[in-house]
Length: 150
Image 1 (cartoon, rainbow, N blue to C red):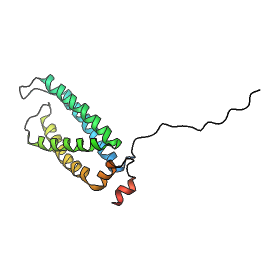
Image 2: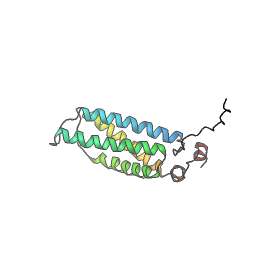
Image 3: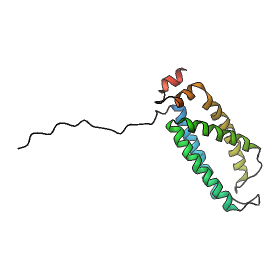
Image 4: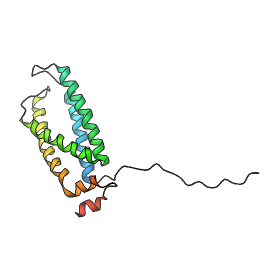
């Protein structure tokens, strides 16, 4: 009869993810919803600018993929994603001056773009707040109470 084996402590993989706080969860959720709406608009794209529809669909599809990756890493707490999201917010605000629509629902697309520009302005300002920046700059992130405390 063999002696009992020693008990081995359970080992878990190290977690590199920072705890996401409420504001970050809200931004990630709204941005994810925005990605889904963009997919819907791409499906029903039409050529009103003389550019072939497939060019618009491929370009928008690539942008949606890039955007989804940035939103994921923003939610995970990576600082490079914060700055990339800030740049995307600036581009979104500048796109408000574009007068083109590529959807079969131009009124909806205009309202969606205006709402997206307002949202982008708010998210851009939010990303620059000191408490939010501190979360992204620290190696382990801040707890929600530290972020809300200032």
